[in-house]
Length: 455
Image (cartoon, rainbow, N blue to C red; front, side):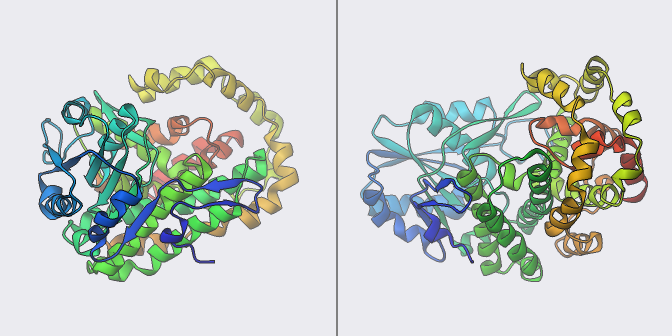
């Protein structure tokens, strides 16, 4: 079955998995003159009062002025906030989702009734959706780049000091994407969006792995949506590399579909696995050293590493392992915490939660040998279904000009070593291939092999 955004918008249905899935986004407009629908959509969505347009200097030029015209035609008064880069990080021209940006928007939020319009991609949407959440004001999103899968998100990644934290936020009431606007963005942004979608191959494998081992809830319908997104993106690599507007539109549709999958599931589990844990870990390290990277660039490298980890771990025969020794050698919780504090540095205090210790103690007691003995054949058959070949991944990255090694991207050796050792604690409740490798007693060995072969 082929899933279409326009059909999913505003839908609610009982799924074969036994759950009822709901997509609360009312309108998703994809195509030329998408913004032309604003005039008719505003009354249908019961939006009233003054609109506040949130953009940066670039996105206001390519789309914000069109939004102003559309609002005028709908007889809606509007104001604007143009966010600008004010930091010492590199690249210096990026706007940050920090306290300063949030403050600028909050100071101009209109009196109720009113609504917000995010004109941009990652940062603009994160800032706007958080302000919408805090003020209870609805917002609509106008996409300007095929760079990330957060257009439909209900969380925002906000920067506090040198740490980016994911916090609850509001989903947009509507999303508008015009291919001609997407084509104005640098190709490197679309390449980053592709890198984000590439990571779905690992996310799906990790989800299936946890479903088999831990009995975690798994929905074939949602998994099918994510599989469709990944397959479409791969088919479009050649067209994307030339900047074809329709290919950019399909890529953005896939990115939004990923966000819809999150909405349907209620969590990012279907689209975020070990590859995202690595990416988030590297982001912490990079921010502390004054560097910024596109999220999708990091996810692409994480996908390479975790694909190789899957190949190596799934080649092991569990019956050949000395499980009694593996259980004995599992580290005491106190020494493990010392390692985490060292690897995460100051960020560990922000990540640590009161129930972490109990979760980790249960993991250290898990009878992994018994679980694998009963399920290994099924794991080897079902888990790799979404995995790609290493040479295929490298070919896609090369075609889009993406880095193929951590060093090329600027990830330092010590960051990489620490991420393979401790990155799985970015989301300790989310079971991934790194957790399985640790429970099988082979994480250090496999990580050292990766450092020699993939890096």
